[in-house]
Amino acid sequence: MEKKRAYIISLIFLVVGLLFLVNSQANITGAVIGASKTPSEAGFFTGASLILVSFILFAVSIGGLEKRIRVINHIGSVKSLKKLSEKARKNQRCSKRS
Image 1 (cartoon, helix red, strand yellow):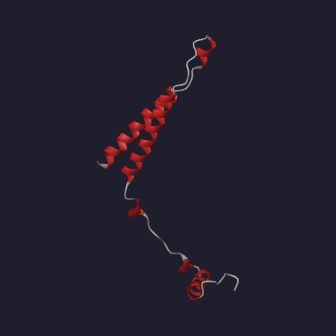
Image 2 (cartoon, rainbow, N blue to C red):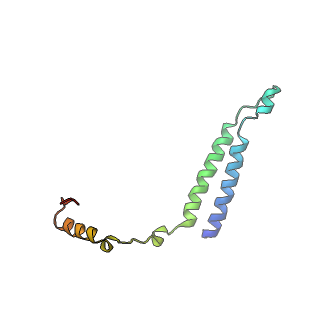
Image 3 (cartoon, rainbow, N blue to C red):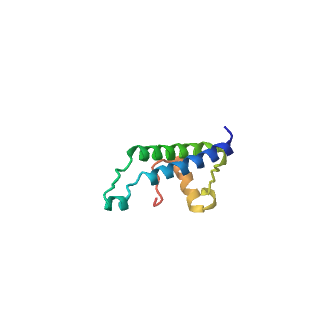
């Protein structure tokens, strides 16, 4: 599946899931006049599952995060950290105070 299509489908699932969640809440005005409606558990679980699927599709549409991550080593730029790292290579139990 193309990344753009997965992203669009993810957004659609998110919106539909949110609509299910909002619609599953009890109506307080109807309860005052005696027409109370029990909260729809099926609507709640459907909405929650659609939102979960949306997040999974969104993660898939992003994809390739490991290619975007760069590891930067700043130990060499600070003199005290550089000395400490050299000591740590020789002795695993060295500390900054020694």
